[in-house]
Image (cartoon, rainbow, N blue to C red; front, side, top):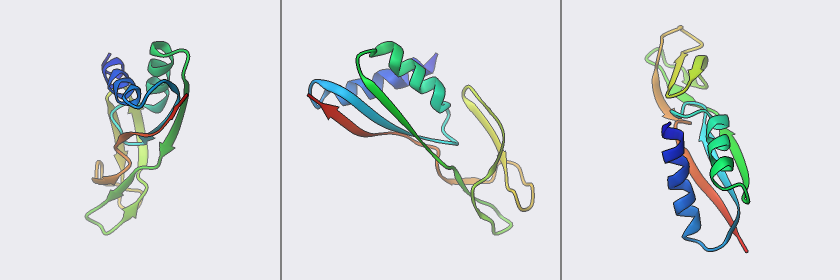
Length: 108
């Protein structure tokens, strides 16, 4: 249930800005929490807020020289398995798209 803890951290940060009406959160494809699970957790904790989730594509750098979006093989709660689409190496180095970021807060 760590999605509740992450959602609570986002709520706490947003609330520092005043009477919140809406938030926008960016969730990377390679983040340790799927976007839909985070959205559900946020909506359950703050039903009066409008919650917008923007998904950000993951980026990897592989030893074969490929840099770009990985092929996601499996995405679950607290785990994502991915590989290089060029050489099929599993779990190349992540260079982006593994973050969860509060990007906008709308206040009354």
